[in-house]
Image (tube, rainbow, N blue to C red; front, side, top):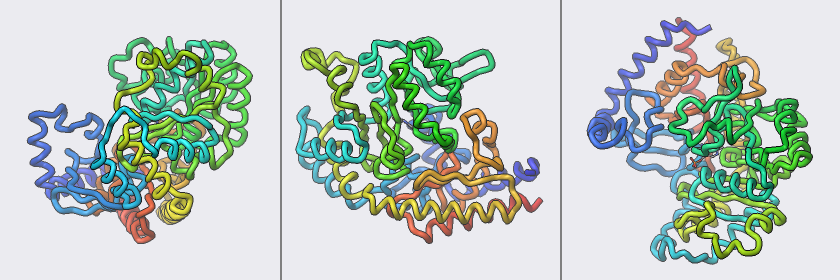
Length: 449
Ligand code: PMP
């Protein structure tokens, strides 16, 4: 369908344009190469399309400005860390106020119960603890699940991503399992800690749980990190029933699926996990994470005597639940990621979904659109995948590079890891229409050979 030679020459042209448009970013990158590994402060920043990343100058609402004076409509939104919009007014005042009144005192503030109560209301779990990242929320939830059940292993779905959690960096392979490609220095072979099955494969799930050594299933309600893979009808009911039957806890990682609504998929679909984990947008970009837990599990995990040795528990962090991140979470939940804001965000996502689907159809491409709440993606396959392996089979890095770089050169920022357009409360219909216009132009050039 796609003429690869034509695609390569278009990509080359866009790379040249990018270099010409961004002399200041290029200079900063060359300087950074002398002190930063790979010329970037975080290794995955090399994944941006283009020979170097643009260096940001500031960001506000749905806009990012770079050091070369370009303005971008941001649909990446920090890979959801800024799903609130950048520097949202409803949170910034509270964050700045807290900065002036102290960041970390090893003491709770009045925001702590406010956040706990609001999360309990949204996710239906009564007790909460806080972290600085979603990764830590997951790591701690896994420890608690092992402590509560006395079982050693965890189970995840193929092509999941739950942060830099050792147990979850595993893939199915032809001969069984293998550490995920790119997994640097695993402490042990993840096959020793983890069972893994395809998403939506209930037979495999039942088979693996029947070993009765699984403390918990750690799952996103829908896979998002290999593009969106929706659960099939009945999947969640069966997942809940099988985990209960085999004495495994169900941990739902809602970090990305917070896009589905104020209570993530748990709230939107009435799911009943034992624990919920999250991070990224809940602090409007201030490092924040959380996990919620059922009363009986909290009692078991943190019950009598836990206070004495709680600083040796492997669950914690000196800066976790600091006053600044608690203030950021309170303001985000109360003023920014409100039910009313979600209505607008989801409406914008539907607008892009409809527009892009029309563009795909008009140009006769065997692609489709996929959406979960305010997160919407184009995918290079005619039908939605049912599991991670199917999803990965339709990825195309060169095509991603071209569509992303084409957009970047025309003032639209897409996520480096996904073909995702994420909507914030600040994203407008006009922003969405511009994104669709640029998408259509790229598709037009691509199919014009
Ligand atoms: N859970 C999910 C579902 C994620 O997608 C990610 C990161 N993309 C994480 C957890 C980890 O988040 P962080 O890197 O902020 O710890």
